[in-house]
Length: 260
Image 1 (cartoon, one colour):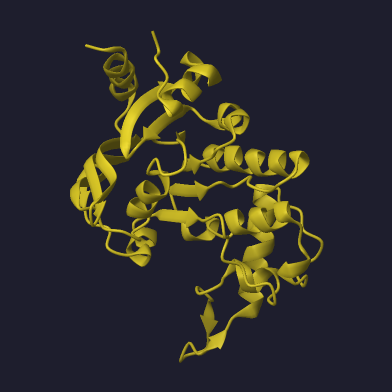
Image 2 (image 1 turned 120 degrees about the vertical axis):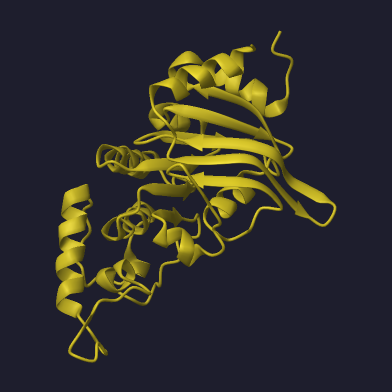
């Protein structure tokens, strides 16, 4: 039994994963974006997925998020095989995604963005947007997560990068997602704003969520991750518990350097 198998066995004997990907392959014509990847997520865990450009990170999370169906392989959620055929179905299964682009509308205010596409309605016919409920729920969630914004009436275009990222993360909470995917959540943020976003990720874990995070920033990965999965050339080439590895070892796995 090699080192990776020992490590995986140590993790899995403690608790069963809530999400399992087994032998996942994704081909785009002759391009093998993912080739036989196994990937697990455990309850209340932050797992970082790292790798160079083209390693397969984005394809992996898009399969979990329902954007791309796998060419081969199996997805198991809470012990049962599932097919995730769309982002809507992923959300219904409790999988929420915060992409690097954030998908915020600059000309709308905070509550409007908070409920974008999921606006609560009122009245017998359910044709009127319940603005009061939107504001109340926005205030409650932002307070619960410790997110500070100037005012709720602020147009999103006037928010800082960190505030926009916090809003994008916070708006997934009312829907009860238990698996949160984040694609480069600290990209283009300064040191102070990055710290606030990382603290927010840790707070999601405290509230019972499991978080999958893609990041090129090794310092941020080692600040918050419990476990690190390394992809290279569409294959999983390493998996380490954060406390049992070093940034140098992870970088060597990313670039394919000889570990001997």
